[in-house]
Image (cartoon, rainbow, N blue to C red; front, side, top):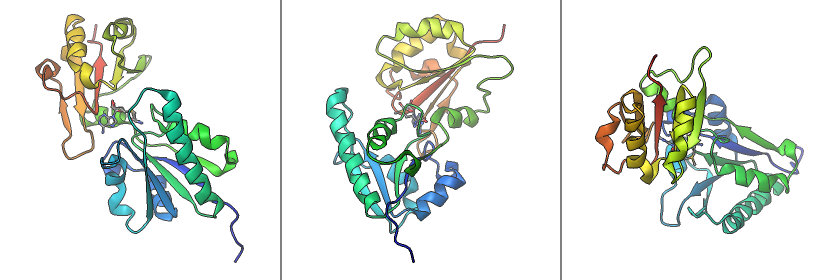
Length: 239
Ligand SMILES: C[S@@+](CC[C@H](N)C(=O)[O-])C[C@H]1O[C@@H](n2cnc3c(N)ncnc32)[C@H](O)[C@@H]1O
């Protein structure tokens, strides 16, 4: 048998949480690779990505890597470089490696930092990104809500602390997907109410997970603290 000189790397989008929303390609690769790297926010925290795929990867070598929730990109870069070096080592010893990302691998995913590091270290043809179902695609499906049809315009926006920045976007698009709402939930709801958009919006949190929650009664969520791991899909009311 020929000896393998270097393995392949797969950045896999595993969907929002429901293992049935893994693609067949993701499933096959997860079963085939030798090592699976999983991201987590802190040493003591469980990796959500790992929990989702755990039932199908029993017995595999798992490497957990901590990527703290910090905004200092220089510091964060050290964590990504460390992960990239560890992945490169596995590859150079002939093993195939997967890295898990929630939702789609290239949509607001920190996987992109890892990708940048790896590109400087290993040949491009050894790097394979596998797309996944995004959180907002899964959220829209939960309530059978079309995201865009005909000539409608769709925007996907991460919410910043300056919620007012959303106003021109909400005015200019037929559908606006708001991600990373988190602690800004109450402010976002107030803006949607003021703009007459609260009644046609959908809120969905922990989509695909056991505690998934979806509602069209956005106003009732004020003060609930439910903003974490959530998306809001804002639809302009029909004219
Ligand atoms: C770092 S981004 C990752 C996005 C992910 N790559 C995707 O394709 O959906 C994290 C944000 O995605 C959204 N998100 C991720 N998983 C989710 C889920 N299961 N339910 C609802 N929102 C989710 C939330 O807005 C969260 O703040």
